[in-house]
Image 1 (spheres, rainbow, N blue to C red):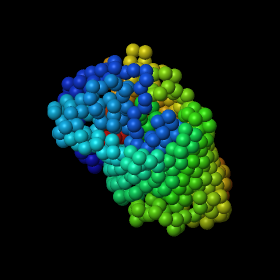
Image 2 (cartoon, helix red, strand yellow):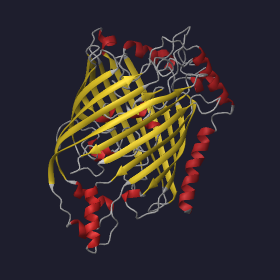
Image 3 (cartoon, one colour):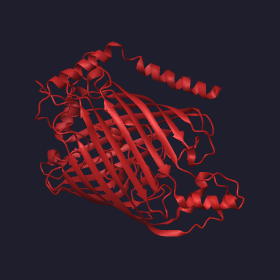
Image 4 (cartoon, helix red, strand yellow):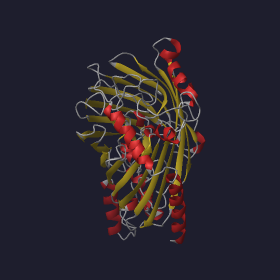
Length: 526
């Protein structure tokens, strides 16, 4: 316990050091900036630019890819501006780095759209030429002062840099966009020491290494069809999060069970999760020529070892076991943005076929701590192909009449997997996010979310039979978890998110006491 206390003091000390940079007067200044932006809002506002959004009439929610760790800060209502502003954020009214590499004042630095600003105007010039450069840093710290197998504190982080090339601006020809994204992860995860079936730190995993996360060509052919091909992952486009106020709805949480996508889809299949990249392609059809309806299909290489550290730059089919073929139908309702018009609503229904030959669900018994002497009795067999599906719903519950930049959103999802192979054939997530927590905090959020995982009944039936025969081990069970956090956004480019998680039946058994986790997440947009 002394070791845990010491490690937590270090983490809290670092948090205090970061927080101390921002004076108490900042909250008022930042709130005033947001109020001015909202006051100048006009109904003809268009959604601000986001990485990968090259078809302006197909917002992230229904069309363009959603990159997990780029949607952490809210966008602002569009404003009338007397001069140019950086393309990344039309709400950055105090950015004075258009003519200098350094902001004119501390206030300007705190209210500009990114931490590094406009680089003396070079960033805007690059964007106008067709080259969009961005970067991010994200850290997840978590510790369990009570419960679990042992008490520990863990830290993990990710740096990322993306460069997107708008070929129409660069060449004059309507040739779409080239996307590149490189990420670097390091650190340790708490999930293995608890243990937990889903990592409580979404940033940990997929090999702590420098990795090619995206290298692709995206092409909107017209209002009805768009495509992407290259080194991509499935998470950007299938069973992905919707975007509210420019933020990923799922990634208002640190838990990997929720952030990114409902985690069981990756546990049960060859679904390509961030930040890994797989040879793949998708096609999206918009039958009405707008974002109201969506029909999409994809095909991705299934590579069970792509997350190994030595495969960070793997760009071939060597070792692939099959092809992951998903489809998704979508329906969207809403205005041009989340500040005006009808309240946003989305429904997505999808499914997949994975052609890989894999071991059936009995091969997963070791992950529940079943002793090796009993595993030889499990009726493990090979299965060719596996399938599954999902249902997602999200809705903006309300928009404050006094301030349209404030509101409340809800999401829920249900994911199911092949009963022959899926360790978690039934998986539910839900969450609520309130944006605008106090009178002078219009961009802060408070979020409450939960995941419920049901273990495959084949495993519980087998374990019950073995226990009746005298075997001594814990029967596999489900695992549920809840998270509550507060997203403090002292600047448009920084989010500090303290929170807590509670896990029932950690590790999918009743062996250990339910752990309480204290977590701390920091995100910076460069």
